[in-house]
Image (cartoon, rainbow, N blue to C red):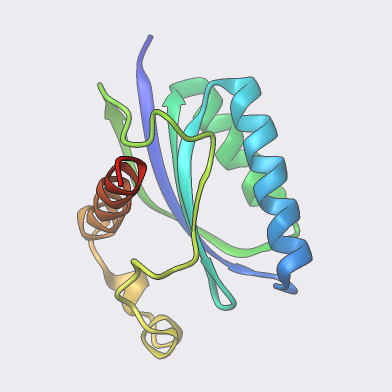
Length: 137
């Protein structure tokens, strides 16, 4: 069965710890059900999420996120067929944007929108490598 990886960006609508907790809880529950893994980078001005797994389920999850009123300006940044998962051990790894090299000002000026999808994917490669390293320390 083909696997797919999608990375999208959006702006949180009404971001606070309660909403973030709800987003993470929903993502983990639905991803576990659908065999999806991934990571969510979040901060007050940005959600950046990688979803990976069965192509049909990832496509359905992305469509559901685009309808979710907790997300504004959802934009597909990277979309590819994959043979191997980057976050195989995580229903949804949470990264509080410590790995992101775009500042809030840069995001506001559209630099993330102009970034290549492969550059954004590299952010998640660093997050995955750090998560593995943290597991063994």
